[in-house]
Image 1 (cartoon, helix red, strand yellow):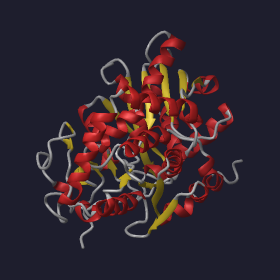
Image 2: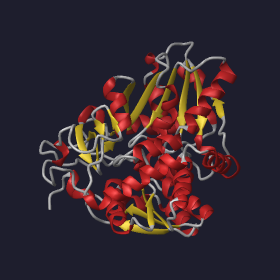
Image 3: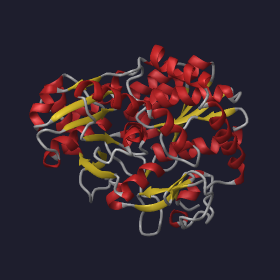
Length: 419
């Protein structure tokens, strides 16, 4: 079997396995498009499930009752709103005012709970009995297990064997919460492969199970749904920065792979053209290294997991995996919405190399007493390494998407001898 995008998902793009990554933008469903990106490139076995999900979201999400329960759970269980913290010491280092949107303080330790609670609530409304999902860094798996428990749904988490080995702490947390962790050894044994296995499972059990997609990727309506639930981040940033500064920020910086925390922070500011938006990918050791995940530098549009997106691929159109040290940035594609925003120029895509990321961890630990997740540290590395892009009087918000408990061993091994 080929290793192109169609072959990996078990839900072939319209061109089949070979060359699926070069599918024409106009092919497939016209729904859920962001420019040329997005769509619904799936087999017939998933069309009904996706149509039901789209209809249910359209019926339930806008209602006062759904919003009351959703927002109430985020407030009383999750701990929202999360603070917008003026990082004075870090600000002195970079030479402009830095605020951290403290998603690490959300229950579970990252922004992932916003989407997990929202989708679990939707699944309950649809009469589903089980949640299935994928995870890499483990934060989404933990949040899915938490949300499943709140709403009385069984949870099964598909996770690549390489990610299981390096995220042992989160695997233990998921199991403690009662979730079943399903190791995925196919392919590279990382996030891409976990998504593929989850889609295959969903094709077989969609009548009783809901696929709780963890990021703004996949076929329509997943990117729209995840982005809607994560937009609470940007809504709070807007209100909080107006209260603290009396004006909107000059820039917002967020790390990303699929793009959920970035889209969550960016969406309420897309029409504010004076607010610059920066999306930071994993640069790996270098742009030439096997572990580089800078898809906006090295990739091109292609189909993966049911959607047209910016995608790392080789000259034959086969998916080119990344192996960044940050497990959550290892997805080879960029969600349709962030792909469109970067291609259109509304969002500026950047990257941070591993050496810069570990230096950012050290600087943040020493200056602010905070240990960021390696994913989050990419955004911090960007402001530390690109100070010339910001003026002295600028107000810059960094979406501090997760805490670094899960990465402490990796960080200590890398910084051995320095601390």
